[in-house]
Image (cartoon, rainbow, N blue to C red; front, side):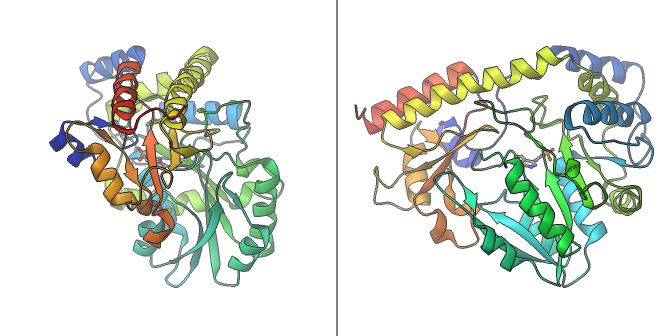
Length: 370
Ligand code: PLP
């Protein structure tokens, strides 16, 4: 959709990346690191300075005890951390439970690791899962479950109670949990971020993945990490070594400084995103989209059935045409495209003027319904 958007000279609310600058202090630190000649390979599994900063931050925010030397692998983004983890822990024929709608990479990651993804539905409007359906998905072949909270694309933040259900099933079936917590600081309306690794019995069976892309608005830096018990970390590090050798050395150095930003930075990030969410959500409601405001991350899933008879792909193409607004068709988040037929996803990680321009176009094209 980003390519279609460029062709149509549209406004890109499709792909999940900010169109505003990364933090100045982090950019300055990156320039200094390059000038200081931190330009050769870092330690394969991450520069010690960054691993220590990750351990500090994860201990203070997520309340997970982290040994920087034995439990952290720095990767080229959460994307690599996820596939390196899955390749390290899965054997051919293993099953991995994935909640649907899903972030696009999880299915292919499982398949590339020789495993079979098993979908469990999150159902709108509040994107809850059915406990019995989840129970039925677990079995002797289940090796892992992937939990993404806050969740892309729905904006769901898994509650402690939901995570306890997942934790119990993981222990019953001796399965691992791989969590993708990349949006962990982007929370609204008092939502609480709970790391699955902190629940009873889960520290030894959880791999916690996060990164720089979303919290520090730097998707192009390609810095992410996996935190896991030492034996699992040893496997992840081997796969990581053969996949990419290492993440960019000067950017690791700068990322370490950014991880130590004070609490104001993280508060401000969430407040700014809430303002963007509210601006876009109210314009979407006004123009006829159905939605439940997200409690985390920076996307809004919308139901377009009141607006069109077209399917999601055709509607998205029509909306972006000739200087319109780009979205992601809902079918990209489901195994069966029919399940996303009436859904499109908007991303609001955008400058105020980008969102204002998008709102103007939506009002012009769809009209205001109240
Ligand atoms: N995980 C989720 C849930 C995402 O939405 C994204 C990007 O959109 C990523 C991971 C990618 O993270 P990274 O840029 O660190 O590879």
